[in-house]
Image 1 (spheres, rainbow, N blue to C red):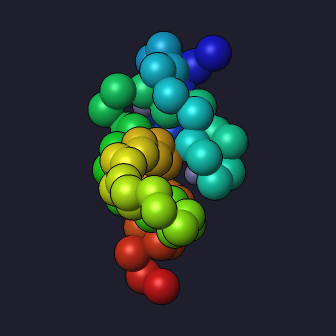
Image 2 (spheres, rainbow, N blue to C red):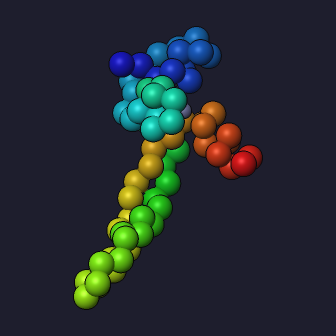
Image 3 (cartoon, protein in one colour):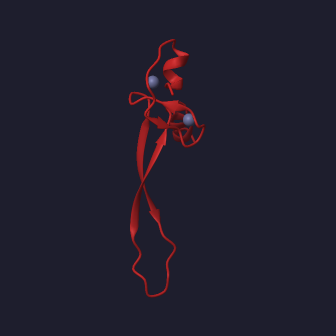
Length: 68
Ligand SMILES: [Zn+2]
Ligand SMILES: [Zn+2]
């Protein structure tokens, strides 16, 4: 699969990730990586862990999220 962003500008680059929001394939130059902390629901008597999760998005969706 080729990068959607690169394809739109007329060249082909191999995609390394898929945007979690729009499903577009993006290359290493276009992928936006974000690490977020997902908080588990608290269980009685259980220690709460903060788990880092990775979110991959394309530039378009990243910009759209930041403008919210
Ligand atoms: Zn690209
Ligand atoms: Zn996207």
